[in-house]
Length: 320
Image (cartoon, rainbow, N blue to C red; front, side):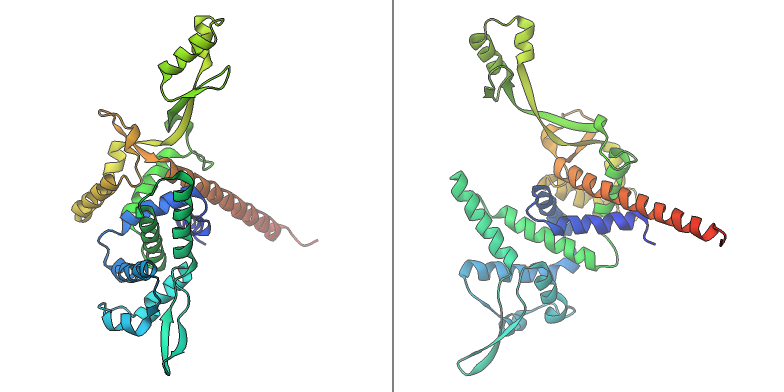
């Protein structure tokens, strides 16, 4: 029987890969790109990723024999170890053999995820009227690679799992839900309770209330200004986060990788941390995805325990 940690990781992976239309899943996968920094096992997959991105930009098919000739990772079999994974993840379609100029050639065509992501990007650009960079797409693909490589490995990414364990221990109730007392909510904007007018600055909205609703008392004017808050994440003690480098032989490695995450603002949300705050904020997407998975895991364990109890009762019941 799987332990609770293993069940959580299995459900976590299923959640992230099961629905890329879910915004929180996308954002967590984008952050996941930083967990592959410097890992040798990821390098062959990153190499092929760069090939297929260029193929998309050039609108060209990929000639398998050509990239086999350029392949530089002798310890990894491109056809057996890498391409099948890219097909599984939707980066590529299965190898196709065609005839051209009287010769049999093998080609690779781009899978749905590449096409879908760039179409989504174009649609968002047309809707917003702003040309956004391709960084989120590249981070999403990188995150999917890191997750896929880790899923197929015998061991899980130690830094990621230790950070998640800290969050699970400090930020969640026994039933799997987030603790309300450590949730961080920040005012996104302000609205008038009377007429619905919205503004980004509180005193500006108060001026609106005073001008447009003069019949209100001062107390009623204050009450008419509504803070529209948005969930930003969960607060975890800084010392608990920094304790992930407590294993001596991993100390420098952990510090460097944490620094990479800080630079990329991955996993953490620094926009709501005060200068002298002794807490760090784990970002809302990670907190919400972990809560969704945690609730599912707790339910699965309850169900299994209930079934086990029923089966045990049946075994202990004498035959009539």
